[in-house]
Length: 419
Image (cartoon, rainbow, N blue to C red; front, side, top):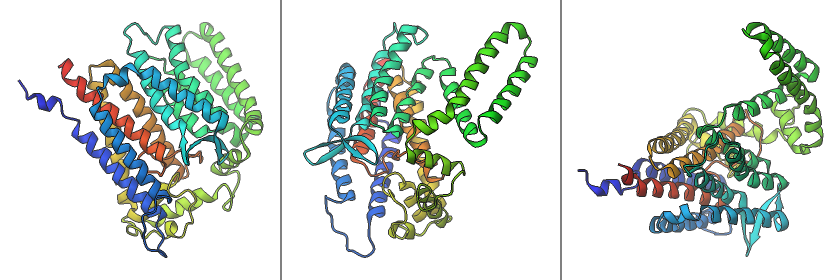
């Protein structure tokens, strides 16, 4: 019989990686905002000072999660979700517009990006609903309800014109996929994105020609041609319709700065002083770091403020410039260990709620991680998504720490019940 204290301990590896990420984030925010021309003074009105206050609040709430019975979070999952939806509605009605998005709620001098809280609420609500043994994702009614849990906050965020956060909510589809959803719910959006990009690059006519050739080849290589003919024709018509709708979507739905960013990313425009400036300066900063970097607080691109949003969207540049390839690989390694550890604990956990909730936070962290670093490397468009635990942003830091805290509590409390 093993010692019960072993079962009651929090996962040491996940806790340690969380601690390292938070420390790395605070150091990076300080460095990004540190000025070589002034002495350091702790001012809670600065970006770093505010981040420090949010970290303190996060630590307090982490402690509360440790003390409170974890069943509270399970039983109140729908309540928490409903509260985050109300916050999104309040933001849509009275929120402050920042960088073109009406996604900030200002209360008593404090600004909060309420979509961050909605990520936690959605992860809990999905886990609560899918935890029911009678729910089967293959059932259309159950699938519809699951999709609506994701679609309601996503839709409100789209109305706020915060398309970056909307992409994050779309990642919750991975949770449903893990629960048995058809892979086409993932493959189709990816194929549609590829078609969208190819159409922008070569135009609808040549894209249609390519699709026609692919359809003809596919018709002749399949064994049961005539039975599959109707399906091939249907898919072909849908695809061609999508191709010829690209221009309308691009010109009439996307905002001007979003169109410019996509054109710059695809190489159709060169705008080193406008939309392409951030990406260009980001690549300079990353490249100038070399193998070992310039040293902490010694990044010239950072200290001379060449990179806008260097403590938020482009925080990765600060790390890459000051610590080089080694520091970048260290950060990538931390996120890799974090994601794989949550995945391992989720997959091996016998409590269904913990497992599904784990998939939820993996989806959110993974999409943030891929898009943020992709923006910094110039391989993805700039859509304003922070790097979890690293970028400056109080509500983001608080939400991600709470996500991990609740997972650690769930994993700890219910681990021994099923052994």
